[in-house]
Picture (cartoon, helix red, strand yellow):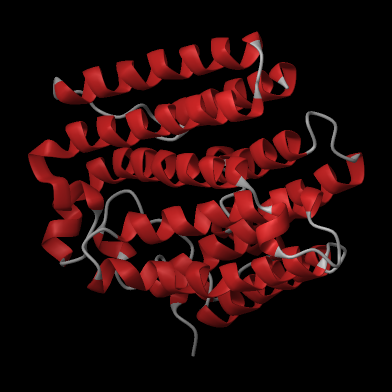
Length: 299
């Protein structure tokens, strides 16, 4: 027997619940994964990647992030009802069943697999290697004090996948096509993700502490704003080095200056006890696209 909330659901209400399950009603979370993938593909191609490849990467990030959201909600379906921000999610509220969630996740991964099959072998296997991290990330908050680091590594795969899709031929080795520039961008992406996801975790600290799950915001405690500042600063340092190595031009440096000002404001606001912007990811989405425009114009 299904719970009352799952009985007599119309196709329209089920469709709306699936849209919410995939977070398609909250575009910031979908765009935040797309951004480092686009950074990588445009930098690796010196500003002019094939249009079809860009399309594959955009669709691939949408499919992967959607599947990741469902996996996260399957892990947390008994935790989310205890958190104000997440209690209305479809699996937490039992608007959708676990079976539906599993089917939707499998469809998302199948779509990503189909898109990855068009890419070279190294890129395809990088896509495969990212899946266990995506699947296990939600469990990390139960056993690992800084689960955001696991998410950051997953985000870093977006750089490796996109860069290798441009630079790695079917016969080349990873050491021959993932160069210094790739790893600088990878490191910047990992630190950037640690920063914005720690910001995102701050409003949930009381609930996380009560439930007994970990987060970087809890781990760093009252020093969370300072940790965020360190992560943003590290991102800037690595992007500066990337700009030097790739000999990027003025537009990139202007965009990086804008990013530094925005991230500095973020730290200043948090250090004075302010709240993250709502939605919490909006600032970094805007900054990410400013940097993308600077990268494209500055190559």
